[in-house]
Length: 180
Image (cartoon, rainbow, N blue to C red; front, side):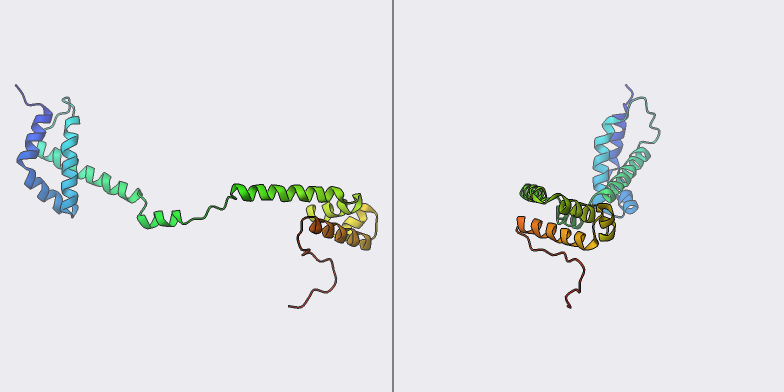
C-alpha cells in the first residue's frame, strides 16, 4: 500500500527533526521561533490533501515552516504593544456622563424659562446679538430703535438670565475694560 501524504510528511519530519530545527534556526535567527514554526507545521500536515503531489517531503516541510514563521512575524507587527495599550487606556472619555447631561438639560431649561420671562424686545435683542451674531448697529436697524436702546436691552437680558441661572454676569457692553 502506498504511503499517504500525511504519513510521508510526518515520517520525514520525525526523521529529520534535528536537521530541520538547525536549518530553521539559521534561517529565522531564533531557535525558539524555529521550534514554534516546526510544531505548527506538524499540526498542519494533517490538512495536506492526498491530491497534492509532494515530490520532496523535506523541502515541503521546510517551506511550510518558513511560511508559518513569516505569517507569525507579520501578525506580530499588526498587534498592539503593551505600551500602546496603556496609552489607549489612559485616553479620557470626553463624552459627558449621565449626571452632566442631566445638569446641562436642566440648565438649558432654566435658560429657556428665563428667556420667556423677558419682555419681547430684550429677548429679540439677545437672540439677534448672541445667536445670530448681529452687531448693536445692525440690531438697532432691524428693530428700528437706537443703539443705546439695544445696548440697554441687551444688558437687561444678560443680567436677567445670569440672575435666573445664579451665574455671574461676565459679558460687558462697550466702555473701558478693566486693566489687568
